[in-house]
Length: 111
Length: 111
DNA sequence: TTTTGGTACTTTGTCTTGCAAGGTATTAGT
DNA sequence: ACTAATACCTTGCAAGACAAAGTACCAAAA
Image (cartoon, rainbow over all chains, first blue to last red; front, side, top):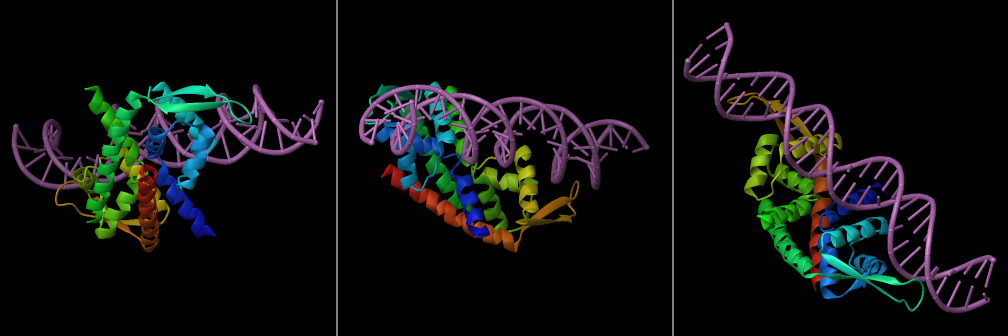
């Protein structure tokens, strides 16, 4: 169905730009490792794939927004648990403001 | 001020992905030419520059979402007035849905 | 009639980012 | 050993945002 493909494109397009925001939102609530983040976002209708998420987490870590620790897994290889830093929380506040502003802006344009 | 630079980055990041949506929203209300679109978006706090907008308009036109006509200007060179097409309005509806879904998703993640 | 200033459209090159696809590593059960 | 499940990482491509520089048109002043 062409329409569904198109619909997915539209949604994918809009998801870009709020992905980093979503990661910080999730990690502000609790530490998590990459695979679990993917699962959580998928549950929330915000689809992300590994090839997107891993580089993104590394970028945010390099910016000092996140830090990580290794933890044993009950099954399989150890997990890299990411946690938000103080700087990450500051950034998150910025993003909360930015997001609110965008939502308002769209409403204004719609009238 | 480092904070302002950062703030701008955050906002710029989020604006991506909703830009096309904003263009269609504006053009659904009335035809407009590029420079006036830039002005309108700036008034709505959605900053765009020429190097972003022109290729975007061309892309949307090539997708059949927009069409254009030339019109004399009271002063200066003629203006390329863009108008939304039927296909563009369909796409706009998709985008309205997509936008609403994203807003809801973010709310869900926030709890 | 050349120059200047304002308006408008376009292109080029760089950088960032999303993602498909493929790869590596660890553990437990067979 | 082999397999399956889990988890992390990298590579290469493509799309898009933007700064910067370029082109073109018009009218009024010099």
